Amino acid sequence: MKAGIIKRSLRIVLLLVLAGSLSGCMYWIRAYQVYLQMDEFDRNFSVVSNNEFTLHFKEPILYSKDFVSLSKLYASQDDPIPEGRRWRYWFRKVDGNNKLIKPEVKFYSDLSFNKENRLIAWSFSSLFLAIAPAKFLEVSLRSIGGAEIDKEKKQLKANSALLEKISEDLPRKPAVVAQLGQPFEIKDEGEQEVYIYRFLLETHHIEEGYEDRALNEVKITFDKKTQELIRMSGRFAGLKVSINYRKFLDEAPDVAQGKPE
Image (cartoon, rainbow, N blue to C red):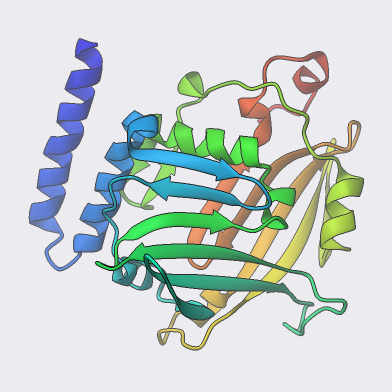
């Protein structure tokens, strides 16, 4: 208990130091405040999972302008909702020349804001859940509370010793490919193979110099022996996501035989 209090106090001190050194970059301060909220996940957040996955923010901190400042990208759609506004980001599958694939394969991510323009919900469509199953997505979000901060790369790395373990079947390659179609490229990595997909963000504006962020390369790693999806990484509207699904699983014989991470 005391260790937890000390740890949290040190983070608050770091927050104050950041506040003094990042003048004009308040969006990083607010992002760090959300990170602190993750320590008490159920107090500050709730999750709804049906046809889509939604993370609700009980104590909103981030503003809509923060996402533009962080990603340098704008949403595909900006629509009014009863609570305020909803930004929808559409990602569409493309080939090596960034031409849309037919038949169309697409997914979306929604950001919902209240009337004060603070983020109240973050949703992902059902197709995204094919590569980031709801249970694993929730556990990976919960693990952020114990994550280590890489200040230079501005990334969070979960502490594997603190990860919550779950009993859940991993998606298998035939089911994933049935929804996403054939990949842009396949890489052979010994006991694993990596399927690479390319998705282009539909957006009406990109800040100059950040045009490459509209193209999102998604890498999905399968175990050759079990055909299980074991890792997913990608960049979605400037947000880097990487999930190693095996780290969230209870120990099982077929998991233990996998290639060491």
